[in-house]
Image (cartoon, rainbow, N blue to C red; front, side):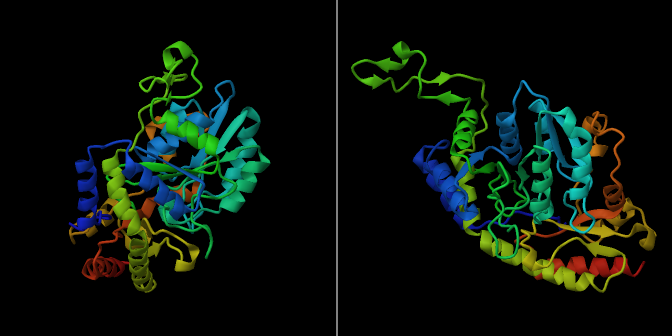
Length: 397
């Protein structure tokens, strides 16, 4: 069965893992330090902190930004994975969602403006947290200007977007000056996969230091309060002593995961090139097919092409969404859905700032939205299989 994504690997990953296993340092060691250094160089940012997943990266950022004495709100696109929404509630924020742009599936600036005009007066602290959906950078300039006008911070869910650029020839996603931080994911479906893992790209060294402590239970070995226990007057700080001034968590990425990430990161340019070549063929074929619209920009837009969203015209095809899914499955192709909107998920649908809100573009688009197969190891034969199925489907239109 041809799935929407599949990890690509070779002997390089095995060699990197073997180095870590033989070193005996499986966590907190040199592989993790190397991975953070190489990510920092690739993203062109001052600081990178790796964590156990993209979700925990988002969770750590929102937790450390939170001012407990203030009312807090997080705003994200309703077309997003639940990580931002869940992390917001865990960190003590309220949640609101925006609608999307039809042509990009990213957060719609007009919808964000409406949400903030309605809700901003109620909150002392607001974090706007858009996703770069499918690897296509959102309109960060417009979104940051709207956030700034309402006194809100801007953070980026870049879990789809490693290797993307904000604009043609521009800097990589992750270091926008208007953003307090960008979260990345190394889930097996991503262009850089580590099994599990995530990272925060940050400009503020002090915030990066707080994230490093927080991911390791907030343990520190400096500025000791109990000097008698911490320091030997004749020899200096006791090497076994640490202190915890506030509760933290275990959000560490292991060196085994970092080893896989190192091999994958070195291959990122090749992965992006292959994905773009596949998208070009998809685009050329889809231009002749009625009943299906690929949501993908041209190569100059800087997308990482993590996903290939397609919107099927169910009315023109005379099919239900389930019938389209089964049509492809009978041909050996397993489509995927990204995502059930946050405003439709029971955990969030009844929240005060979500309940009763209108999402007209998303509600229209989601009727026929699927993700087509797209991954580094996808062969031309695999693509031909999908294109034949799309052609067969179009004949029904």
